[in-house]
Image 1 (cartoon, rainbow, N blue to C red):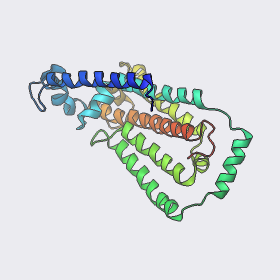
Image 2: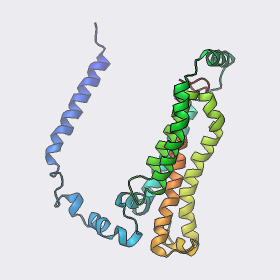
Image 3: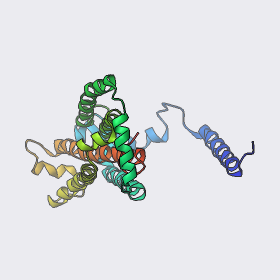
Length: 257
């Protein structure tokens, strides 16, 4: 069997890059080294020692992502939205009459597995409830908007795999998914704009204590993290399901896997 030159080139590229990465591992500090640059730096020391004092949030990772590094996280959310819109713009196409007829015939002939449907009905509410817990407690325990959004998106994908894409789109349509994906970014950016209107800097959550009841500047930062994490979850959930829907249906949003 003749090997294509492009495959040989790809193999050589993988070997070269892999060898370079493996050789660079010798320059890494030892695992857990307290004197490594990541641990001994002034910024890292500030995060470790001052996060609970400045934000009342025990989860350092969430505090860094949603507060100290809020600009970066907001634009990561925007990147997810733009990536999803780009995939839709490239692959989305109207369903032709023949494909619709084929989907209807396949739906009529398909055998609905009672065990799968029943299991799906039992699992999906639990999965979605757990996703809400991950979002709501992401600043106090492992979790957050990205993780909760992925779990929510996975629940809708599971629903589409078992009940069919058309039945799932009746509950969570393409328009709703697009709307929620944009709303997620608006929530994140809108929180920053409200901070500016209250006299603070963009995403400077401390000033939100002026409108959040029973909070001081420190607790306002904690509550604001929950608000922006909800926005992240909306965008991640919607785009994740839209990407699955358009790829599994050949861009027609009909039939699916």
